Length: 99
Image (cartoon, rainbow, N blue to C red):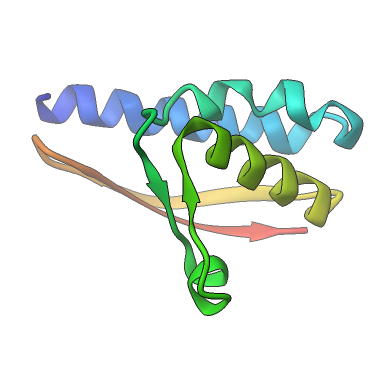
């Protein structure tokens, strides 16, 4: 993957998260689909909240569970991405979510 591809993938994540956030809570499972497709079957998802609870989510099913729970928890939310950094191997996305 080159830096341009990493940036395009980061933008897909941003677009998918905004779709989830802007959709109705009752449609969270359907609206999480684009996010879930960004994960591999052997992915491990960890964020600060999960880490504090000593938890992580595994694979596409774990990602789906995480993002549906995320959407239901926030009710109304919008994420503002203020920095994206990319290289040939990774992308770093920095944002705040207000809900």
